[in-house]
Amino acid sequence: MRRPFLFPLGMLGFALLAALAVMLLWNMILPNLFHVGEIGYWQALGILALSKILFGGYHGCSSRSCGPSRLHHMSSEDREKLRDHWRSRCGGDAEPPASDAK
Image 1: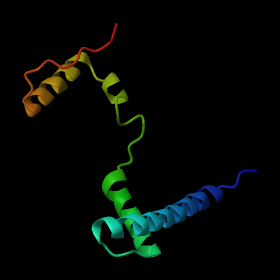
Image 2: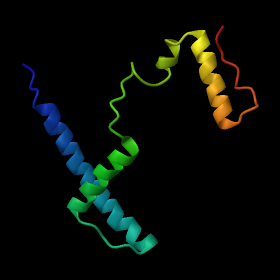
Image 3: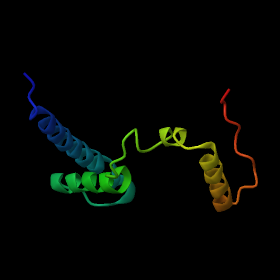
């Protein structure tokens, strides 16, 4: 019998342990290097959540909707338009690397 409540509890436990790790690492390293104050557990949990929002994001990207697999579903004309668009944006006169398609 599967226990669906175990996964959310495991994720919560992981987040709480990660916050403890952030707090310990911050308090061991940053006050000596940058002369900042020490932080508490709840501040570490807040930093962890903020870093997830800023750097990890919650964009809902799945393997089917993002990444290189998206290019495979484009027609060759659409791919060429996309290449031209990025060349014009980046000011690239250089030729992109050759693809290893055979």
